Amino acid sequence: MLRSILASLVVAGLLAAPVFAADDAYTLKLYKTKKGDKTENEKTEDGKTNIVINVAGMNMKQDVDNGKKEIYTEEILEKKDGDKKATKLTRTYSAAEKSDKGETTKHAYAGETVLIEKKGDKYEISVKGKALKEEDAPELYKSFNKKEDEPDNEDFLPKDAVKVGESWKLPAATTDKMFKALGDEKMKIDAKKSTVGGKLLKAYKKGDAQFGVLELTLTIFVTEIDLGGSFAKTKDGSKMVIQGTIDTCIDGSVQFEDGKMQVTIDITAELPNDGSFTISGTTKGIDKTRVAKK
Image 1: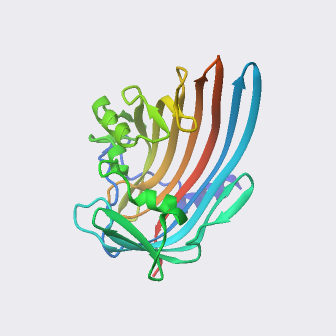
Image 2: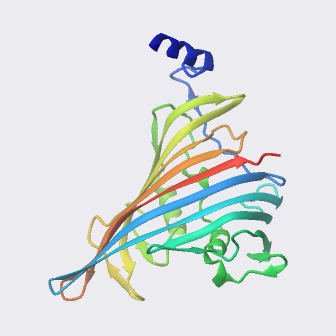
Image 3: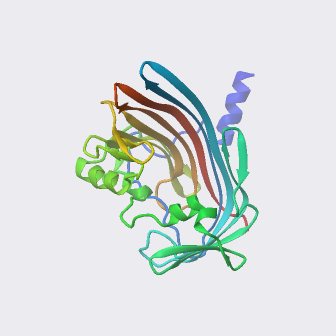
């Protein structure tokens, strides 16, 4: 039976000899979107967070579960050559919801086709010709109205070619600028100590396109955290670690992504009178992009 199974795998091409040599090096290049692109997208997150407040020797604990789910078809209507983002696009959401403490709430645009268009220096969002207020779609507004210098996916890749199994680490000058652009209003980070690195885990062919599996790791050291309007200093070692594994086309010819992400947070802030605030937890997510079927 084992022999027949192996024979079947060889016929299917799953155990065929690789078409690249073990020492081949790859210059990693991701697909750049353009006008007319239409994709099917799925994004989910599931997080569990533990909060412990210690005041005068007394511990108060709280466990929080949260998550989100979005499934939509996106079509780019306008995008100029050289721009990072489209200036006009639509998203048709079959699912758009978030969960918090066991309760699931649908977003205002669930089941709707959303028009996202840049007007002036800001993106505006509407449904059926009616403007969607920012308070009804805060995450959607935030995702499009980012800082101009905020890094995109290709900024996390090495400039030089890498071999399968080879790791890379972005230079300090690059990560310093990157983390400053990614700065969150709820926390302050040590941009010089934080790091970005990756590894090419696998390379394979799919048709004429070169695909690969990438591993990315961001280690973010947090120095201060916002606790209800005022910042509190954190203890040494407080950090967030973002780890992602992405199966994608690495020669820039095909729009495809199958990503898995995990965010681990472990931050302890100092409170007055020898008190402390600790937040720890893990969020896992998936991010899939496929060319829409015609």
